[in-house]
Length: 184
Image 1 (cartoon, rainbow, N blue to C red):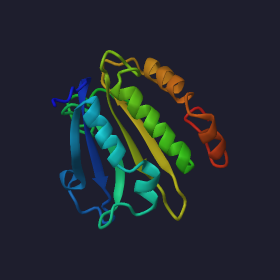
Image 2: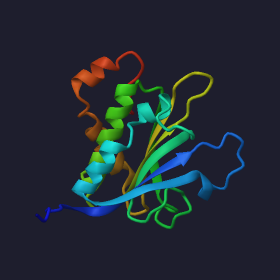
Image 3: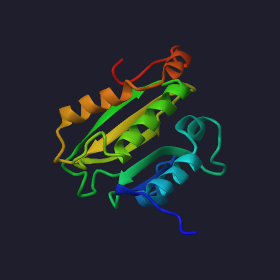
């Protein structure tokens, strides 16, 4: 039986960035490609098997290495500012001590809105990244959405904030103790 695949508008590549506590590794040694997706089925396979940020950064799921950030970028675009598609672009970011449920819900909403092209149907969103910026025992995270020079930054911000209003109420209630979304 041949299985029908549903193509995404664009392909997307997953990356993890390893921590370098001594600052000795070149960028290329710190980044690891997890895989590329060009269909809905491939995307869900990765999405279901890559641990959510709260588990990736807090519970030691990645045995033998420390992951500093997780990202997903359009096609062959690399998650670095020197990539030609990112050079003249920008980013929207939020840096907060998100509670685990809120962190995971925001990451999921951003990734889904990006991959389905609802954040920007013109394809000017290049990728998203979630970074562990915790220090001295205090959990702190940075969520980023990178866009190309063709994007309208205010449109990106408006659509992103609208997307984030869709966080389920039970998640908001469960995470009310420590933070919220980028609008806070």
